[in-house]
Amino acid sequence: MLSPAHQKFAERIVAGDTPPKAYRKAYPKATAVTANGRGSKLAKKEHIKAEVTRLRQRIQEKAGGLVMTEVEKRLFLAAVVRTPIDDIDGKSPLCQSVKTSEGGIEYKMPDKLKAIALDNDLAGDGNLAGANAAIVTFAQRMAHIRSHKKQAK
Image (tube, rainbow, N blue to C red; front, side, top):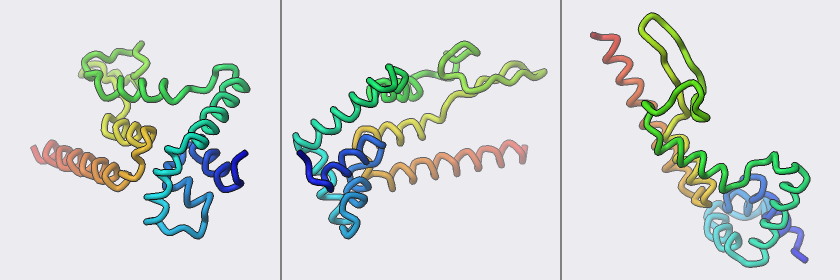
């Protein structure tokens, strides 16, 4: 039997919170520094891992297999990162949209850098959220610079 705080922590992990964020919700008076250290340690405890597994299994049972497992999500994100855009067509599960114009057909797929950031969070490395945000911001700035260069030509 888990303490109420440990139960809440496990439930928040299952809901998708990072260990530090789950720790802060389970222990609202904890500082960010405390939550970063203790959240990661608590997530590695056997009784917490067992409860997280139990809760995830209950969700799968209730959903009848309709809910993606963490492994399925991470495999999808890996495919996003590893698949070249040239391998995408309208039938690809990675194709988000198709635009046809006089210039040809344009296929859009998910953002690779955001996929890396999300996979990092799913891996429990959410304490790198600042680094994830920096990567996304950098990519957005580069895209902005590229679009301005194209317009200037």
